[in-house]
Length: 441
Image (cartoon, rainbow, N blue to C red):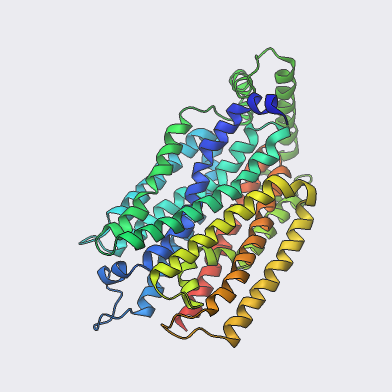
């Protein structure tokens, strides 16, 4: 696509820029919890230390697991409720509502401290999780429905890049706080409070974008849909291209209505061609969670500590470098490799590479366990497999998302996206519970 095509779709890119701040929030919340809980003052203030002042590992691990798992629990129910809400009030206003819900949760996390104990953080994480789960289900469908087919794959592929950027930002914010702030409530209030910045950008930005033409057409508001479609394409409502695209949208909606007659919600399984699409989305996200990559994102500081990066500063810095690797690997793949390699081949190659590298990391930890509380050069030997694993995971899932979005159409896309997010949250919660049990044993 040339320069003219880019400017022709500038309003679609602006919509994606606004909506994907919610995906940055998703990545940010993924990485922020583990770093905050690893802060020394956080442990001292919330009673995660022994009587002699040493860290109580069991309590710290329990709180770390709770901070992560309650977010996942909230996200599950957020994704579950997102489909009927967005179908009823539209993509734009549902996203704005979910952003407000998320902001309430972020505020509760931020004001915790003093007489307001861990309960505020847990409650805030649940509420924020509801918002995040819903946003991550609605946002890709909204962007995809508004994007012309010639740029749809590229724009939807930005999803994983924004997740990686959010994770990276959370790591470096934790690192900066750990480096410059040793005591005081700001140890957690700054990381948690900064969640409100992208939420605010998204909320105000949503006021500048138009509702999905597909959703409007599905509600019989054809004239509004035509006006919004023409606005997004920077063309007149009388332009032949706009009329043709609008006719395609209406024909697709009518075809789906005919296909759904007598089926209801069962069409997700038994609708023509839907079963294989549903299975692809569900299986991909189950395997993503079981691959362990998100557990690393959630617990990066603790994991880097366990392989020999002693001290909060070193483990947070290692997490930040890991975040940079994720962003670069994802961006390179989405922009330069996804079309040449293809989704299937990239999934296979990177999954194999990820499995081999995880095996290498496990073998190194088994044969060369890090001495406790003693700095050692051995973490360098473990850092490179960890970063290479991140590269494989980023290339694998960067393409998987765009594959999922380009395989579905219209209302099926929204339902399929919601289903895949639900499966992801459920699998994520199961993975985290297993990890928590291991840490206790």
